[in-house]
Amino acid sequence: MLKTQKKIATATKELVVSVPFDAVSVTAIMKQAQLRRQTFYDFYRDKYDVLAWIYQTEVGAAATKCETFRYWTQTVDQLLHYFQDNQTFYQRIFALDTQNAPETIIKAHFKTMIKQILADLAQTKHFSVDNRYSQFLQTALSTALYATINDWLTDQDRLPLTEERQFICNYLQDGIDGLTERQHPDSHSQLSVKKIR
Image (cartoon, rainbow, N blue to C red; front, side):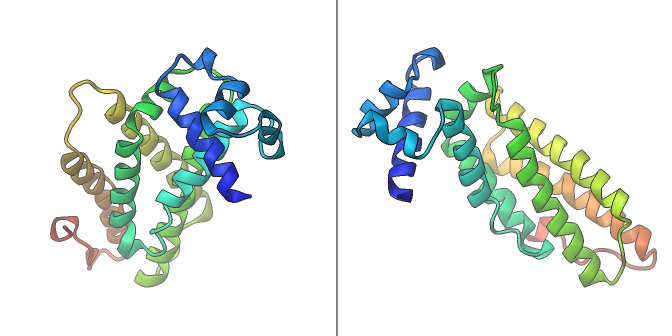
């Protein structure tokens, strides 16, 4: 079942990068996937539902490395590689002003990732983060991260992936260091992005 669902999603992505979005119909998707048209409705309501599944599944998979704050830089790597590998698809999607735009779903993944980082950081460094401030940080950082990746993908003169990664990691690391320093003024975060390659 999942194999068929993914096949439909892959066909949708192939069409999004090759034809105007208005031409991406259920009939066209299923022809591209080489499946019966009716099979589409076993998995999706419409083409927008396919897009939502792509954001939910693929971006979620790209963010799976972030189990503890020690590995968040690996998650940034994985996310940037995913978006670079799917650059044309997301360039087209970001340009759409339509239902099921990716922002809400992608930012939700980022918020979950940041929540995990903050929770593990607090546990590892033995301090507590006020719940309301944690929610504020999740919203602010996920919004900034989404906007940064959107700009990076759509900029004609975009930075190389390695430089974009370093800037994002420096930005997030500065926040981690500041939070840690406020909780423990006499110590500094042991994690240094500059030492991570």
